[in-house]
Image (cartoon, rainbow, N blue to C red):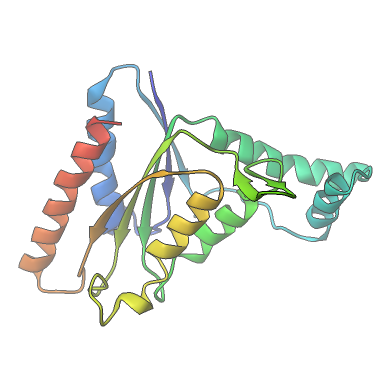
Length: 208
């Protein structure tokens, strides 16, 4: 049995290329074992807490060994619950459209909430930061309107590098990528790109 956590970052539903390809991964993952399970977090539907004053104050109270107020402790527990849900998975899948050369702000919100000291990363004075989510595979499916996998446009891609950096920071080393581009091309070109990506995603999903 393997538990997959699927982080869906597109609000476009069935019109989303990244979500469409992610479904191929999920179908292959489920077919690989009847015991495999999938939990989906759509960041557009999730009730993500604001990282406001109470949560920040609670965070620094815990970091400095102080006692937070009851209100701060309750606010911080929301963060802990989301991080615990994230860490409970055995493997991970992200579907990520490119927005303004980067990731959707709702996905950034989710990443900001779960990337917390003592929950998903730690710090050693001698060796520096280290991730706490280790030994687990993750696949990210990226869709972009243009072509960024070339020297001329590579420097404008803050989507894939950012997500890989944030995943690596909290401990992931087995990071797989599936890229769908260019989704703003003619229908035939887009169709080929999507079908190729689906084949790649299905292979990854069947061999987690």
